Length: 102
Length: 506
Image (cartoon, rainbow over all chains, first blue to last red; front, top):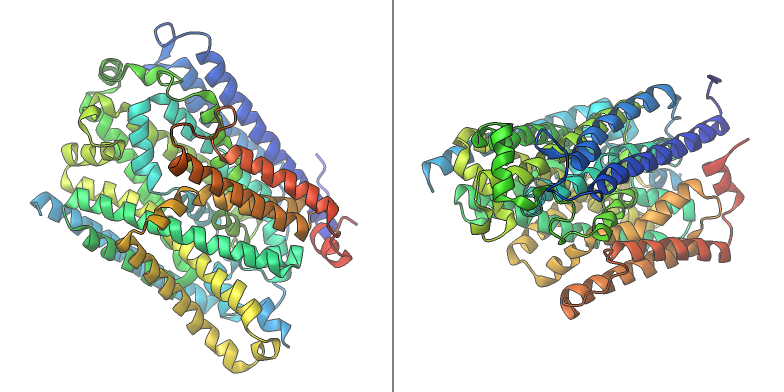
């Protein structure tokens, strides 16, 4: 994995853009899972014909219970392995308003 | 008042006082430690010192309002599991807010000394019109939301304890206003953390009560299929169509990127480690809370007859009164009150910042005056006075309950999203975004959202305006995005200095 140090503003901006895109990607992935297991499975039957897990219909169990657990696991993986630590920079001095008059 | 009511009130009183003390002590310590950062930085953003747990909890506590504890589970009781399914749209919310806005806001706000979202908009768009429009939208919508949160809390207090509406209102609203006024942002986020933990506890108590009373999971679902046969139906007997449910992917999904009260949290954390931890804690906690609260609601018909209740808002309070012992009930009721207080305190400190920092200090004080020692010395007093006065205005409105406030609140959340979504998000990541786009987009989408909401709730409620069965937020966010892009392309490009500050890539 590419582990160049992140020091300059340019490095930081590139990394932040990458992380924002990863966030959007993971978000879309969750939407697809939620939709496909929810409406996808529910659409193939009626409450009378559904498969039930612990009294919960399969569409709900997969989309909302399993989906939640999966998303937590993916979040941990993404944050630990793709998000990077760097210095956020120094405070620019006193408050902008207090400074502008000096 | 019954003896049960008295015990509940005592538990709540202990909880409220604990909040007050923690808020005041912690904020005082923070202000002392970070004294060199200056009053404005400490009061409005807590000296940017939030760690991971506090950041996660304050984010969740801010966007989890009374509706997640009372309204939402109540609707879940009448609609079944589809309402739980809908609430799970919020699972990735903490992740996208912090993943997309977190670091970018953290870096920029340090460079320009921003303590509010409007500070950022001012630096990015360099336009007084953008600042004034956004500050006015913010104060107006925030006041409406605070009033309705207080009203909700006071009604709940009244139902559970039997105390008059006004007493409940005064007891908890005065406490929120005191710790917010005196302690500022640090007091808000530390109490949010305590309140968030209470909310988790409350959720567990409710679910355990429902499952326990029903006699375990097996008996519960068999009772449920008799009492609420619709519970497994994803359309809830046709009353909850798919386009309606999908609309929530904007309103409580990507739209939350446009809420200033959550976005501003990106300016307040300490370092990237805190942010990374907050993303993980936040995701786990928000999903857990949404799941257990709404599942409890969906299971409720197994233990109470919901058709006998005046409205779905009574589902949770009646479980509390019927099945919980008073001490447990007191702890449980602390959770929705916590959700209300944490939402109000966050809105209050931001509305105060909008008035003092964004409007008064930017446009009503001359530059030469700002540098004078007397002026700098007067800022703490003025800031606290603004918070206090705003707080009291909100209490008075919650007592008078004007129709206008009720109506504005109907579209406050969507309205904020319409006003801020594009200026915040595109400003951070799109080089061509400019003031022309921001102004036209905010005005057009807020106006259209207001109009559609007014039309659908007052003028023609029987045949509401809707595109393909979606709610009003969908067309209005589309209007916001289209106008933003088109008018940014027409308008003047941002200057070189702004581009360097925000997007330097070499």
